[in-house]
Image (tube, rainbow, N blue to C red):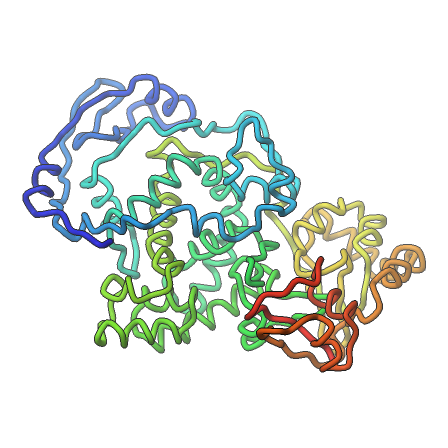
Length: 476
């Protein structure tokens, strides 16, 4: 339930000034962060800053709290949304090292499966966060974010900050590392389109910066586009290519979609909520609230998952900005940060590219999640985009005419022949059917003159079980 503490209670909390110096934690920060000796480091749980060199207490101005900062939703489970991207039986959960990482730490499994391994000699993220900053410190930091989009601080946001800085510290560490590759892509697109730079944090909460992430509802990619929304915004989706997983193309499609949502509602927090649940649900929430157009005013009229969406967006913004204050640093991971873009107009298997250019197949898979079946695909009418680690650009240019011919029978034709009957390359038209009560794969197949195996192959179904409302792609 929503509640507000009294102003007296807020005042009492704001007057508390604990000054517990955590010597062990400070020494770890000092050795890990590489900061200058005299640089001041914030000490959590206090309204002062302590200089490590002389232990001099320097007072800082903290904002006063009011009742809005104590708004809470006592029925909220912060991990419901954070764990919703991947099913529990996914590859990433199977890859879990249960001796160290929590089974809920889904982002780590994603990176582990992609071959992103920790390197030695890097700043270490401490296993736990010994600090407990006061509400006034959290409020001050959020007020100082260089944002256009209004960022509210309350106990709902605090819950997600605590989740990131306590239970999900390793996940944040990997996110910080991956952001070095993905954030420049987002920032360039946002700058070109004139949109707030803080929107780059949306893929953090949508996909944990994993372009191969797929939700239970079928949303895919960094920006988690549903099939119809992706097609509406110009993304190519067929059995050979899914541009929802293309980091660059999906980013520009997301910019277009977010712009349209902002133009519709005139408020960025409402646009962000609509990105999650659709503009129709936000319109309904506004109507049910009596016409109010503020996210927090329509909070309880929104779908439960969407209630979490703006608070976790604010929390992600906070933790990606103030991670060092909580002893969290970017993980050292093997990732080809510098890449080049190649346009292709024919099919070539990743193994053909690897054989001549010596680029590891795993790196091609990591950088090109939009190509299905490890086959880079394009035509003269619709060219495909292949991303390569920059150090292999020269080799690719040298061998580009030879690659498609290299052992094509063994490496390409043979692989294409392995694809199940009815596997479409996207040349035919398709539509999405929504499952209704009483539907089975057999009845749908008979209705549209296709086979059950074709339906399974087109939709990646491992069983014949369907749920009402499920979307089924059908090619004709």
